[in-house]
Length: 68
Image: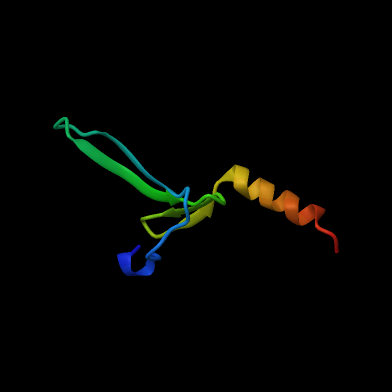
């Protein structure tokens, strides 16, 4: 995802997660990077987006119990 498409501000509680492993030469090799919003939305910095299962389940339950 291009840096220009990200918002300039993020809500309090947003987490920046870097996942990595040790490469063959012993240096850190980055595997993935993502932003996790307080509402559970996850923005992978490779350009894809998804919601964490717990947040998605809670969202479905809120929608299902909402009055029609």
